[in-house]
Image (cartoon, rainbow over all chains, first blue to last red; front, side, top):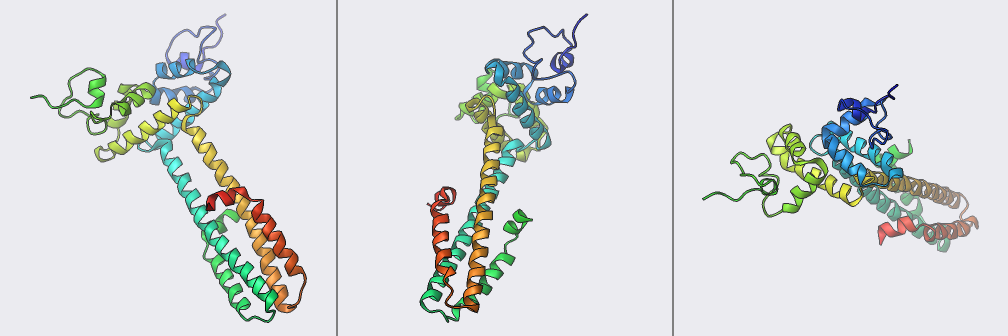
Length: 146
Length: 146
């Protein structure tokens, strides 16, 4: 009895050898996975890439290739570079928000120092209301904490 | 006189037609760009992908493919999926740091409210020194602002 062919060998309509390089990475029950990488890289390029990777890392490499291929099919212009740009942008925005918060913390610290030296200072109340305003104006941070 | 062949046609040792799909994306003076995408996707797959994209977006698509191919050559197991994971991790860490900072801000706010109600409170001084400690213990935020 011939054992079941892997998704790659099924797709390529060939016999699946016992030492098939695709078999551990592209199981027969997930034909979509091989179809995606085949569409973007071509089957023989995928085989060449897997060949250059230690056996124990091949499945992870195949999963990463599958994700990249899916993103490229989803966004044929930017692929996963589009995702990377958007994540960089998020980090940049977080840095801006953090810088704003650090400024606010510095104000609070100065304020508390002033209050320690001069307990009845009126500036404190004005500063507190500025802080409320800052938090309301800050949808990015708000969304992270919701 | 025959015009100079693009990097793709030079690599494939063929004549570069006037309507060559590779020519605007792979100029002759940057042979490395085509060599990279050729190694990962294969020349004909790159051609097929560009064919499916509107002309004005092809150069951007070729640049994204080049970046992905470079990352895949640099990291044959994870490629740009590795970069995406690391950026997600950075964002997650930033969220944790922000949550900590928000907690500190809440403390400060409560503190200033307490001082307003009770100007000579001794808790204020202890709180200020906690805040100093928090900032010293926070290398992620420190590195973002250096």
